[in-house]
Image (tube, rainbow, N blue to C red; front, side):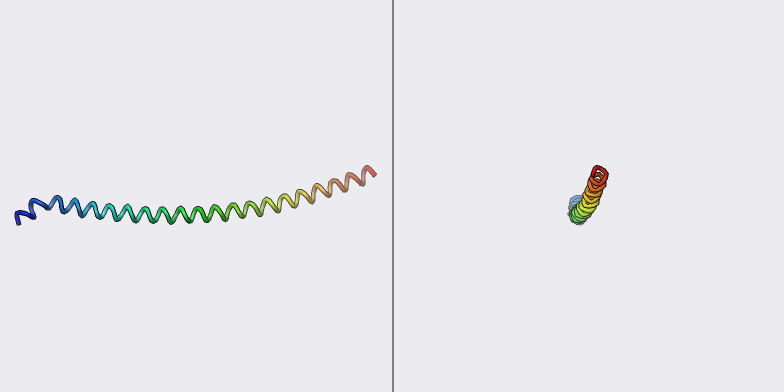
Length: 76
């Protein structure tokens, strides 16, 4: 009983350290998963923007050709 009274603080400290380490590990894994999710979302967003820019460029190209056609008719 005397040994338990002498070492209870150390035992509680070790248990608390283990609990803290497990909590840190859990948070680290959750953060890593969130980072992977954000990277996937970023890639999807970039692909969406590329497609949108492609559509916009195609429309602008068509508009430019139409303007050139109209100007050539006016001048001719």
